[in-house]
Image 1 (cartoon, rainbow over the protein chains, first blue to last red):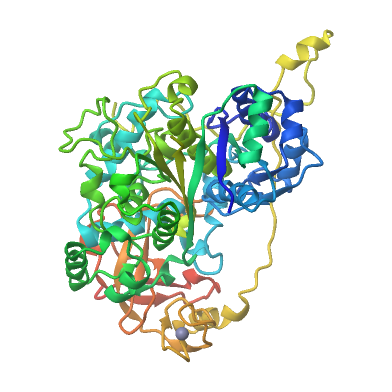
Image 2 (image 1 turned 30 degrees about the vertical axis):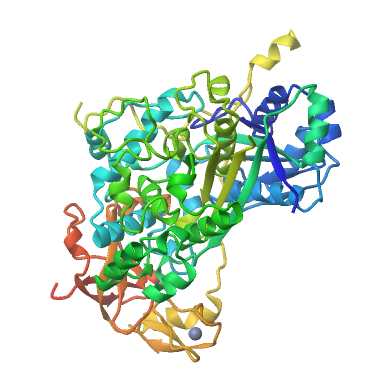
Length: 452
Length: 178
Ligand SMILES: [Zn+2]
């Protein structure tokens, strides 16, 4: 497969509501930002772009079918080829990988991927109902369909299995909200304490409002190219462009109904789901003991799809020890609990160690005062951007927003794009972007690297 | 400030009815006038078939919990599926025990619009002896304002509506002895 580079990204303003513009015009903000960053105009872009991928989740929110083509024509990109991708919360991650496929396969030299969601058309509780329709409407939705409730059940089991605490969850919220103080794109920029998180209104026990991301209106876009596409883009831009390439692609799935998730044996886990850094005697003994205590995999406490996605992406990129070999991660923290569960899926720590990892300091940024006593130096900052919890979650845009933040980290341009380089991971060479749908049904992991 | 002291009213979609808006004579000024926001209702009756899963709901109406068991590998599903997720084999209907244990739970203080009037309510996944998967249900007979990790592992039993609604909420669970 051909090498694929990401040359530009753009993110619109994310807000609770964007009545100032319709969705097409919000996407155009992100698209225009890409062109402006490259230094090319719309006419040049039209010449270069071979096709697009449209990333959006729900037709309910807008009460508009085929929104994708309305973006395509608004951007002036008809009659170029395009297709829509949908996979719940992972829509953006899947779309980004579809754009990669378009280039890697040789089908296109330049591909634009754009994503959006406008969730403000209905009241919050109707919005929750629309989102909960992403659960089995025969068996799950009618019992009390509510995504925060589903994730709360998962973390209660995590707490039961491993002794994870609500304070550990709260520290993820503190980290991500404080990171966002330096990110003007973020919707919620707050200096919080663990007490603030615990004292905020209870939504689904034990998750409070500050453990949970909000619904948003927003858009994001990215441009991917082949070697030839890069050469053409550089010619149009009249300058050399930073080389950031995609080196690993992974995806996984699990059953829609959480109740159906398997409870596998130690041997089954090791055969199908273990990572390279879990093959040593110490890890095997650790897991043997977990199984001895009644742990079964994945149950409802772990996201097997996230593990599968990471495993594939690491194999593709040649990553053997993720914590040491990845410089930062942008992951899908729709809930503080899912960030902790995802540390484990991605092998930044072992299953069961997510809670202690969260408060170790390893996933924090250096040089930022979190008001917390962190025992360990930062190793691999997770969600330096502030993640979904602080930036917002306009579903179809989210995974692309994460990819754009990942791109800027690797271009070493965080300061330029955010007007503040506090969140720039110094010397970042390799990052992973993780996108996740409903209770861990679809998950993607994408490895990106700066070419020396 | 204490949580119960409100500083602003809840936002809602209530609003005034407007039939016209002023327009400037200078069309250059029009770009400054967005947005105009309108509201309309969207109420629909849907017809939904439970299809191959229908016997489960007939079971509830007759105070039976029906799951399925794989004919090839024996995997037993508390929430029925007619094709085995483990091996692809065909499954057959079996009765699931009426007693089990709380595998995990949550208390929903908010929810989807359809369930807001019922908040706070308790959602739980139930595990059963000899059954490989879990069952999503409401847990009743516990105080939703005093949740505790000790609820995990609690022995519970199924209760059924006298007048079936042919919905999964025809069954719910309560602690054994309550
Ligand atoms: Zn089977």
